[in-house]
Amino acid sequence: ESFKTKAQWDKEAQAAFNRYIRIRDEGKPCISCDAPLVGKSNFLTGSAIDASHYRSRGAASHLKFNVFNVHSACTRCNRQLSGNAVEYRIRLIRRIGLERVERLESDNAPRRFDIPYLKRIKFIFTRKARALEKRRARRQDNAA
Image (cartoon, rainbow, N blue to C red; front, side, top):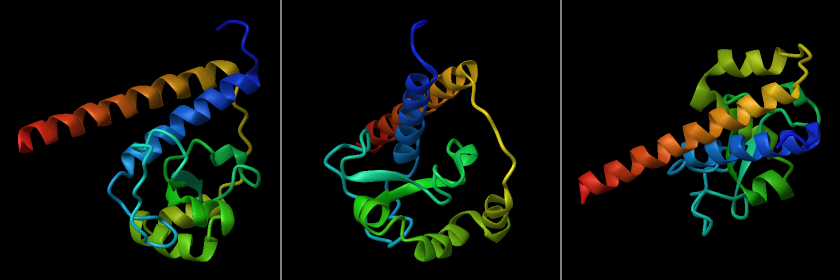
């Protein structure tokens, strides 16, 4: 753990964050095309469902851990259509509101993520994902 580089921590933090997004958005359609998101991966990996960034990590890396900037999308929209941005925006406004979308679009404040911050991100979103999974499991048990 203490020998990990910043890049390794960043990768792990991003993986934990993306996993949380896929679990959070379970049951919702693709943010870009409204197709049902049905994955063989049980939402734990990005093999069938991606955590799609409205403002890309390359263009706005400071928003890569912003929960309003990232939503589940089918791999076709996210990878082949580069996020399908026009349709993403239309559905994003429906999901989080115009004010939040405009706030994302105008947020250009630089942010640096140091190793302690990346460790916190990984810890927080791993915990949030587990809590969501437990809550869903309890609901399924109660429904059965």
